[in-house]
Length: 424
Image (cartoon, rainbow, N blue to C red; front, side, top):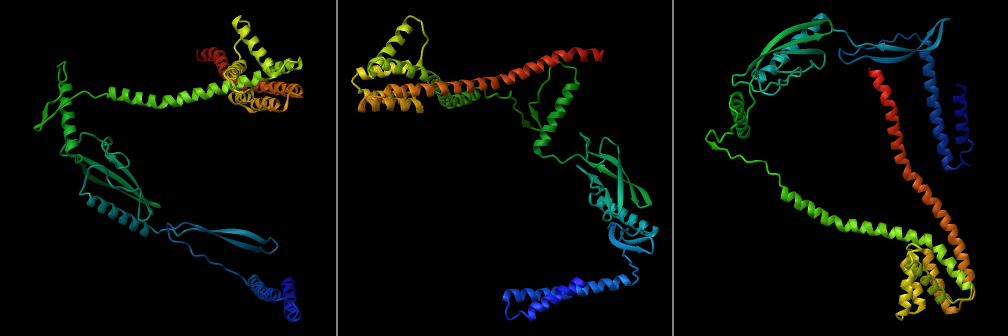
């Protein structure tokens, strides 16, 4: 209470004493605090008056079927409890015996009206419920014969005769402590069939008669109800399937070829990356010995093809591309352009840089080219080491799945004798 009065006095002071000096926003805030403080004081006084008065609360119980509800109260008992939080459960009303009987009779009437709608004849499902009178009365149904209608009232029997099958429905209605039992009868009739269903049914009956005979040949009907029947074996559409499969293959072939070409080009570039360091190192070595770029280039390709001719070395993509450059120069292409084309054919950042480096030194002179190539070779060797580690890690990852399969197979082999002995 003291807090509320203090806030009220402060708000009044700001509104009256500082009204002229304060901004409009401050004045509005002070006015709002005055209203809030006054409201808080009135509510506090009301609570104090309620606490001092003897409260005898009464709760209205909800009607039957509407459920229980809770109320939270504060309980004070002299010298025992003080401000104890107590949850009061207010139960729903209980029906009297007369009310229970009235609801049971109403539920019986509701069932009679439902059966009357069907004229006591059913083809697919009898309309039943598990509760009536808005859930106040529960119902348990039993049907006899059991193989005609299931517990949900669905007709499950087949080949129902034209006169139908008489079914007894037993229902037990319960409402609180009261219950009643009654029986009703209805007839399950065969389902109404369209022309197609009737024809198929006639064919089934005809074939059934054939199976009951002792003849060793099953004859299909040629005519039923004056309508001619034409039989033929099911068409497999094999030519159409072959044609469709061929079209699919033809459509997919270009994509497969493109995928193979991309994979081939990827492998080629990987091989070229691995062979780059050796080629640059050998070229720098020959340039350092005093040879020109063209003579060193020719020496490398000549040595390579001599070794290939003697089958002393395996095929290397890098020297094959270098030989193409030699042919281009012999056919009249300038060395500068030939080296640039070499870098473009090999692809990759390093080869393009290498081709541009050779072309640039042809224009400006070969001073310092050897040092540049040696530096390029060192960097390429380091990159090849890194690539080798990466390929090794990838190979290890690819081997992981087969190793897991092998481990599973070994575990099965070891576990099988133990399981077999347990079964014995």
